[in-house]
Image (cartoon, one colour):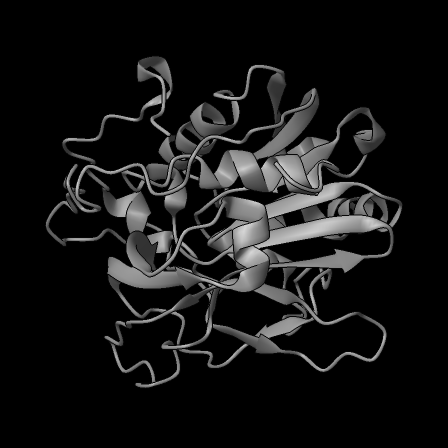
Length: 286
């Protein structure tokens, strides 16, 4: 199935500036620090110019709140928002950092935290904001976390939400960036379509997760596994291959979806996040 022209994300070149270095980062960065790395380019043929994940067959009306503030670069928010708004019945509201402590999240079907710095996002919304998100999900709300937002959902950080029974395998968060091979699980094919074999996704310092072993939370279900890895800057080798690239779980009555890499701006994978938000928002088979 081909994506209609208006829904395609044309990315001949995507440039990530100094803010890109922060993606997925749980630790603090020195004020004023700048990246001197060359711009990172996303080729449009990374997946052979093919639509790997098809648009959802079913949709529903969704009201989505997306975090905006320290720890979430604006270009990342824009990329995720564009993907969600490709759904004809979805609206996205940017909620500023200071609002998360008091906003009535029951007005939304799900909340989204995009790439950037997980610890900075946690600090920006504060303990009251984190508590508000936890209670919202516990009472039936949906959560989608991408890269930094996936770190935020984990259970092994004092600043984390603890809504996913997962922890990171190492505190060496800075692994680098590139295009990794991933492969859907049987559970992932129920969510993302009957796609077989490996395909490419953009990765940038996202979490490498393992079960956290919390007895009060159900186990997560891997949606896809990494089949290749990158291990730069002293990060451990051999832990990324066959670890989940995406996973879903539950917290109370709510649904949680996390993605370590960035399908939202990987050519051919633009429909991963729309399908994820539909599932987190209550639709079983998008």
